[in-house]
Length: 348
Image 1 (cartoon, helix red, strand yellow):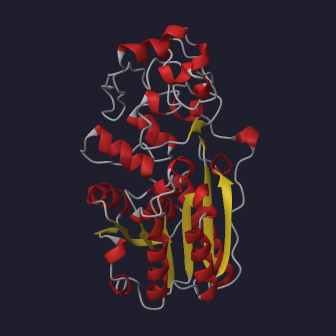
Image 2 (cartoon, rainbow, N blue to C red):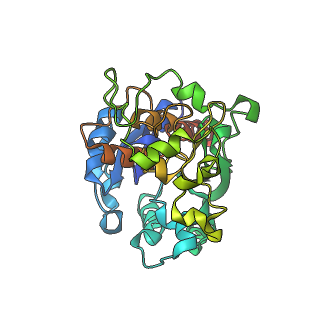
């Protein structure tokens, strides 16, 4: 990088355990701190990223405190992925609960931008957020503040994330016109489930690998054990004996619902890794050939966390939630490279 360029410094709002932070750091950016209201994320965030974790509720946070963290004269970058549950397609269909406090987290993000006045803003979220008034207002406020804004819903496998996952990436800059990162992978070069987890030791449902305490799979109920034994890679519940069907699938209304109780395929991408990825009945999380759901380690690897990422000594359900809520580090990496490239062009 040009020696005349100012130091680039990043603060990560809604940081969780640091998926986005890790990717940004890997791209060469200096991340100073992450802020999140879940204090259980502090261990993994600080242990793996060498950055300060600030336990705080963003709705009550005084952003002037972050101004004290940035160095004088640095290029300031503010990034974040607001909790996305209220913006998911599932939530939209069910209730569109505008009284959910998470709906206005983007408004608090704007409040932070007004106080910190970063040179660059980045936001990653589910695609459903783009249909909301709160997102439209977020973009409008950024433009009013003098930012050039570019956003796009991207398909994660095009950026090296082995999941059937579409995400919003937004970049905004006061330095000049900024664009979304170019795709890094074509369909014939997608990273697959097999590329990521095929070589892991074989385990059964309810078993823990002797080599890796996170390579453990949930125990299955007897009926789910029979269901997965009859499940084909890439298939649906239609492959089962009718005696195994849940009642909801016997009704006409359930005939098209095929997004749960499925097996993944080796040469394709996985489903979106959610907080429930270790549960066979919560999505298409069946292992391609072993009779079990994904292990915690497999979910972490499919989220693109490195094998040596330390998630801490927490109950399995909490680690799974931490992993499922995270931004895939690989997405953070491509966003970071784009920010770096932009500053090399426009930064002085």
